[in-house]
Length: 126
Image (cartoon, rainbow, N blue to C red; front, top):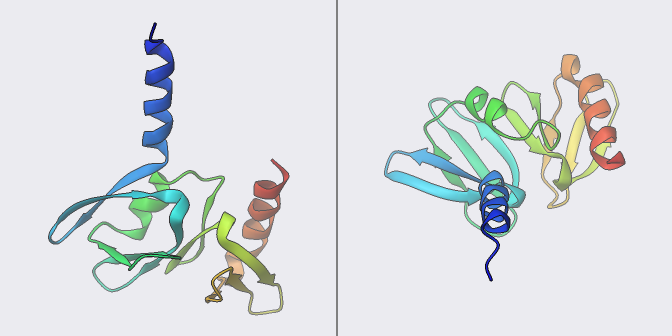
């Protein structure tokens, strides 16, 4: 016999791991666990991944900041959101930087550094 409650639960969890990107040429479903970081450009944002080409969305960085799970994604700068699961190293000097596991280095805004380090530590304590 099929447990429909179980199927619904799995579908809901699958949806939590995916979001729809709205671009100029349509909509694309992506898995958020594969996102390394999101970068804001003038009139669009770029979703970057380890193993696939970047995807462009016409939504704002703030839109995704509120949509993505706050325990995993953190806005480190007015132009960047990072996936805590993809962070390799945090440089905590005066000008903080995040180095991702793929080698990309991103600046942390000075006023966001303390909150980011706290969020990152909490992410790895769960």
